[in-house]
Image 1 (cartoon, one colour):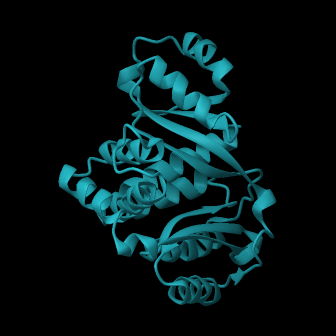
Image 2: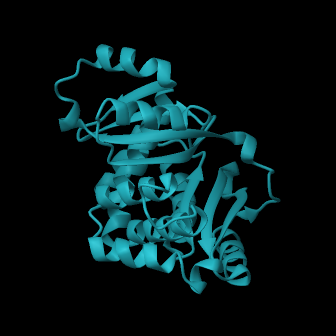
Length: 254
């Protein structure tokens, strides 16, 4: 699953840029609001989904009053209008794109997503047409410093019965991957081990990726970046392979 590891680390680095423009906060506020609305309680001790959303908010250094406003919103009339959407389509050169969004306006989100696909050389597909190209995985992000006392093999041994599929060690963080079905079990195991998790979520990991030359890849990334700028869009998954050449070119642009 090494291709997934490279993909996740690139996405993680890109996430830091999103945080600077408030994108991560916007997404987590929606998560908290929906969790408070659908979980039956504004109390995180009684609402597991809300507890996870708050944990992710803390990992992103979201202010406490911002979290509290999102929880309060979850019990108000505005929250009832929030709906989760998924869109599937192709960017240029056959790159599959899967979009997750949350919006209070169906017409707006559909029109905006369709417009981005069209303007940047892609095409919006039918619902379910590309879902087979992505596996839903549980992804847990842990500060590497918190695991410094663990030998990697010992940690893997402890987590394997909870559904561990891969551990990806990066410079600052450690990413733990599970199957969709093992997501809850891994949550419980890490809690039992008293390992503090920076963030945990279900992601769509591409089953295969496609390498393009740098110029063509940058064209695809224009579509992805523009899609991610939309306030209704939470995250964009894709099958573009993040080659060393592309990574280097993006680093130069920074």
